[in-house]
Image 1: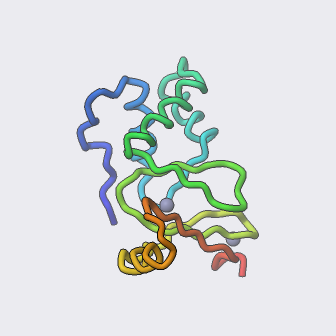
Image 2: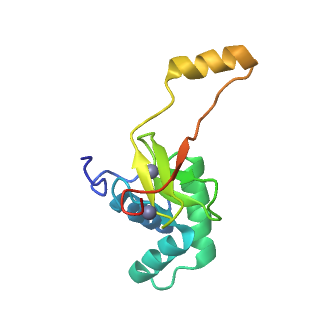
Length: 137
Ligand SMILES: [Zn+2]
Ligand SMILES: [Zn+2]
């Protein structure tokens, strides 16, 4: 299991608020995906004066810098956030809505093959599986 990363040095150039949002995301550990509203609630418990827009902008900045991954899963209306750095697929239960990590990435060779066949260049891939989780089956 990967270590919780809050001991790692914060990347330079981040404001206090941005560091706080990054810390909250990183402290969740693998397999936890936070929606914006949950993140905001957690940020509020640490810094009651922080505003929704600040958290929203911090997330966008952290995402653009590759520090936080934004996950958009078909069938969900909101984006979820998790620490960046370990690519994986996701499974979404259509009954209870839980989202789990799946230890899989589309192999480079397959992506290259598809790119060649279609004439496109792949920059990223998101894979999500949908169905019923072990509890809901
Ligand atoms: Zn379920
Ligand atoms: Zn994940």
